[in-house]
Image (cartoon, one colour):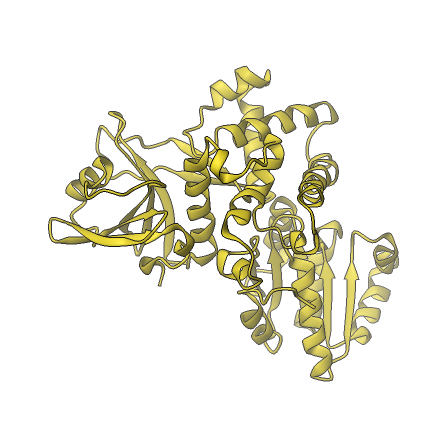
Length: 395
């Protein structure tokens, strides 16, 4: 059973009666398997016959060590709903899925995976129009608070669901370190050359140190001792294995706006702090600003709909806004100011609102909610950091 009712659970439960293939993607240990096990329980309550296979388990992988016709026959009689965890380990997975989907047996398939590189190859081959993908993130603030956990604890240790089972800080730190090691040993070793694994780990640490800063690939290459194309490849691997989010800059063809810059954010605060070997209390940290900024981004990402995007904005003169939410291409600036207490609108917000009159307003995220400010007839809402997953513009 799930320790926390996940935000995805209801939609996934509803998908059980739909014919398309349900695919859950996301980094390791964010709760994909737990969600699938929850769905299996729902199926059993509905008297549906199920089969659950975890392809990281050699015993389950043996199920597929037979001729294709025999495998299909086994799957067709195994259950009404078939769950396949880490399906990208199976070379012909989507071919089997397609045959089952197109058959008259009406078998529902629910599958999960941690590597978008391999998953994308599968989905491109034969599943167009036959699947629906759901990205699973670490626990949101709302999910985390449902267990009555302290806010500062989330800022330090992040939202990996496995932390709910660990009593001491040491156990939590060990769990986070084990997740990183599993990622490097299982996912990365299969994607890059053996001699580059250490360099890849160094890159992860540099991104943790420079989280939220504009990244120069050339500087990273010099620091690590790899070529720029190799660094680009490594960054793409991080993105495609869901451990790092790339944020592009927003610009409307204005000459003084930075157009091609990128920022990178690791997918969880606890993972970042494990890479930095720094689990200091919030009151003692010098990086509370970037922690707060990351918290807001990680609250935004799970809520983005198909007509939405998130970017950042910066000019060559140094004015900036942390995030630009886009809905139907209309921009909405969001600035994170941990210690904002005054009535002076941040310069970056004022300049952005002046240059983009179509922006309906703006939002400042800080430690405690305050009265709204106004600029040129548009409201600038001031929201508490604890409520950063409740941004109006995401509705």
